[in-house]
Image (cartoon, rainbow, N blue to C red):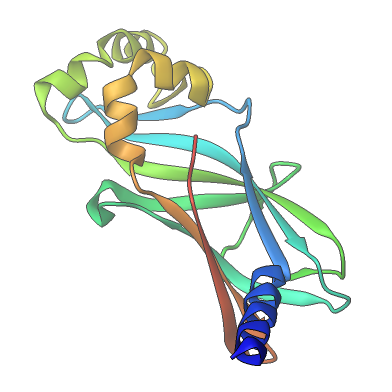
Amino acid sequence: MNRNINLLYIIVLLLGCQSTNHVIKLNNTGLPVIIRYNKKYNFITRVNLPIAIEIKNNTPKIKSFIKIDYMYSPYSEGIGENIYNKNLVKIKNNKKKEINSFEIKDYIIYSWYRLDTIKSTQQQFKPYIEKMLSQNKDTLHIGTVSEFKKKHKELFEKLTKNDSISIQFLDGKKLGERITVPVKW
């Protein structure tokens, strides 16, 4: 009996000490929130929110993956994302990306949230629409995520609640380990 307890203790200890060889860390960024205006229908159609993502390879081998997935909840709130390297150069999200051993790669994700046309939602953006019309623009930078979160708290929480980011690493030429982390702003 005592031997079984010791064996169970060792198994629990070993399982508890296991850690993933890849780490995904999300960080806030000072990059601007971008809104998009539809002149034909006179409303804001989209809000793009930036988040920094850090992917660390804790192994002695080069690791690779194809895509960084920003997963919207509910799915209908999102319509895509743009991925940039740390120098804000847009990169293709469907091409193989490599991380050298014990290296950290930084990316910026701009999520695309679809806005509804409900009057209460659109009313929040009225000052921005006026500014965009006066400047003849269809996009506008409206501050950081922190500022947007303060000014439009209810909308922000509705859009971002339960979102996550997922990466599936490759195991040779096959899909391997998938890591998913919740997005916390």
